[in-house]
Image (cartoon, rainbow, N blue to C red; front, side, top):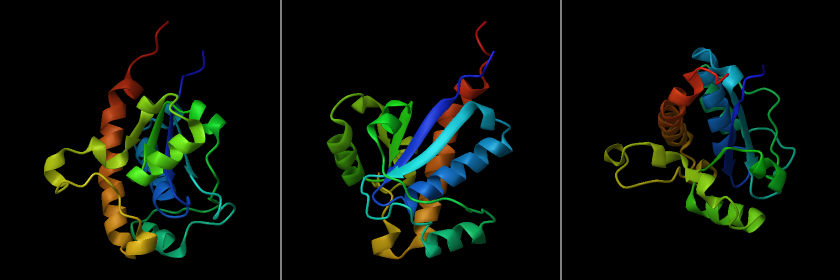
Length: 167
């Protein structure tokens, strides 16, 4: 019997900084926990302006500093099919959510979440968005926020991923 995978789709504006970083970080967490076969992790953009482009060099650099490689990842625009095939859709900021809803409508909007919503508010200083390092130029802060958010998301998903299969 094939294991059912939980499908996670990370979304940001261009899919060259935040969402691919989150995809790669969560994939690494799943691998280290031996749960890669339980998760299907991908990322996409709400715009098509970066389609086909690799991860932005400064995002790639901050991942490399932390020992994380990101070869062969290129930006892609989110499609309705990608959305429908995802169990959970994780946006980096509220503008991403607005743009996701422009693409898919209000259908299944309850499966859309902000990444930082998975973290206890005490550590966020009231923020629930991952700031776009394309504009802030603070790729270290983006990495830190994404790592914290992915850790909290993984901890949220982990009990269902470790649960035995129903027969």
